Length: 296
Image 1 (tube, rainbow, N blue to C red):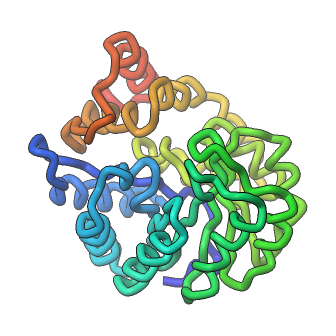
Image 2: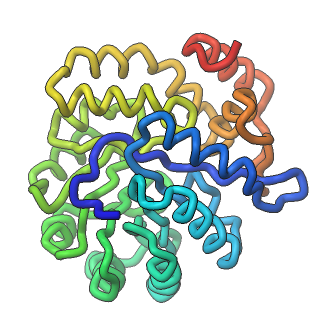
């Protein structure tokens, strides 16, 4: 499916696991159907929220294939092809494209980090060799490096550079990135607590953890803003800050998987090093879910 007009709420989908650690495809089917029924505008698989760093290549492809087939072209499906090794990122990208993925998410090289030119070439190496739109992922809190303004100014001109997922949490950075937005290059918030502020700078929506549990709400907030009903969007953003903060009171995706389990959509299973929530944080999350009307 074309991503040309993609905007709004793109869910950063979790990967559900069974108690034995295998992928729970029955739960994955429920989640995909949940999003299709509730207005989600696009689905991202194999991102940070999807725990892809603990999954094998075979599991990555199995999840991506399942979601692409279940969605059946109704909304775009984007696949995470991130790695700190450029060759590995390219290999992942090739496998996802062969499955019929609509777009790719490419992350800055973490741990080894690289220098300015190396980061630029890390992205362009993949974008030069694929024929699908690519979203550049800026999340320095996890990777230890950022896409500099100089590199963004160059990368945004690449014909396969579709957007930036801006997850630094910095309005200053988002304001800088906004200078490079155009009809051919977009920005999506990677932080659920500042979606409306980033959209006010020209952003097109959000790649969202919050949408995992409240897809209709996040979709409508983005749709309202894009339709010019800024006050309605602002109100939803502010009214849901406690839930959003609770979803990040421990490292993502621990709280959101706990929330989905409480909602009866998945089993609460993780792969190490992730571990179930501390009791105090679980109480906070449950209260926020109740406050948002998501659990009784």
